[in-house]
Length: 129
Image 1 (tube, rainbow, N blue to C red):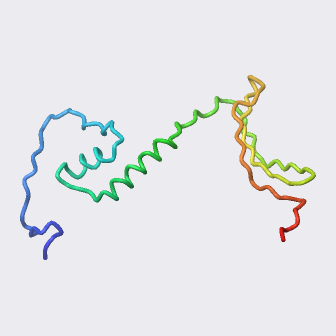
Image 2: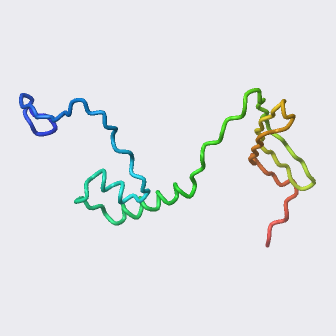
Image 3: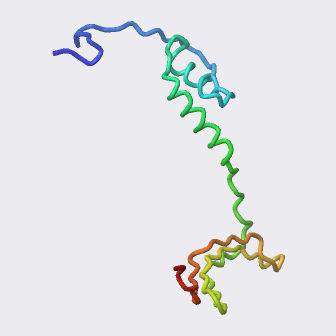
């Protein structure tokens, strides 16, 4: 029976361990270039398909463009107010999700987030033709 590594189970490998080492591991690479990250992972002699390199570059650019830092949580004592707001006009009906944090100490809303749920046309135009 053979193991994945192709060695017999009875064979042992020598492992070098430095005793008393308090050095921290190297930090992650500061560069966001996918080529630098992959070279450090797979070694400098390995080559990737140019299509894979382009896809990784596009993914890194999209990630860095869409990155948003984590929002700070509201301060203690804030009250979460959320619900659905429905607005009806002459021509359309609209529903909006609303989420807000109210701070009773300052007597004002600290953060208000809204998002469209649906928009329904009540008066439709006749079809062309």
